[in-house]
Amino acid sequence: MQIRNIANPIPTARDVHASAPTASQEPSPESRRIKDDVDAARHTAMSALNNDRFRVMLEQITDPRASGALMTMGGDASGAATDLKTAQSRYTENSE
Image 1 (cartoon, rainbow, N blue to C red):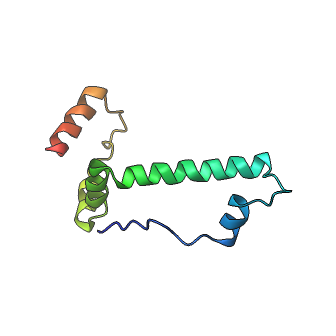
Image 2: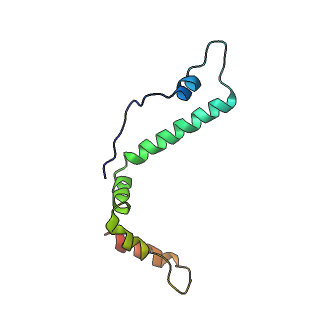
Image 3: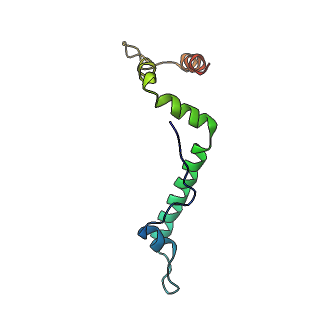
């Protein structure tokens, strides 16, 4: 899997309109909130893409061979909940 980063995406008409109000038109609080939410989501996504641990995890879970391993991580047949110590030990075993 290869993750590509596009540094300067081509703005859409909606982006141009929302980011460049005319002198007589101030952006509404709703459009400002939406723009702030989009900026925050973009920042979070870029941070995740630049995080090596996240990249490795993403590569592992998208590997078709990993589907069997993910299936075996499900709960046991009795329906009993897994306690914290058991979950931590399973996580440690799978991390090595």
